[in-house]
Length: 172
Image 1 (cartoon, rainbow, N blue to C red):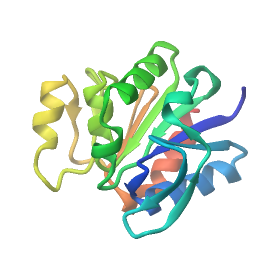
Image 2: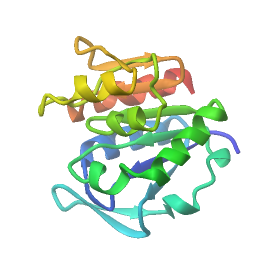
Image 3: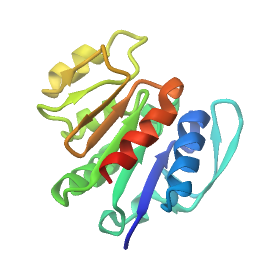
Image 4: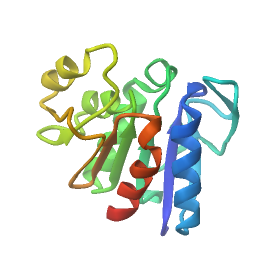
């Protein structure tokens, strides 16, 4: 498959700007964007926007995609911070795929071991990012809003959704 990415969102509480802005930019660049979640149906964002889920995470075959993009929002940790996500991320690492995350979602990549010795950033309004990154051997860079390190892209939140998408496009 070519030019196909998975945008992985929580079934409840995803961040709509972080999802919609990069999705539009990637589609305009010719990518097929498949929306993946912890369950099928419609996902509900933190502001009650709906998004159609194309595929359940457990049905997603990593090999079929050029990259995995994890979207943040308050539901991300509840619905996506788990062994299934970690296994999909680890498979993407082994296959040399792009792996991206925005807002709170870089924590999931860190816990999955996808950011070991990589420079990364993310949402840190709770002040816990340094501790999480340190525990998982991630180099936290709080000066940057969007960071590319190899085939990893991390970003701080919805205010940089456009830059996040451009960073993804620059390496995929």
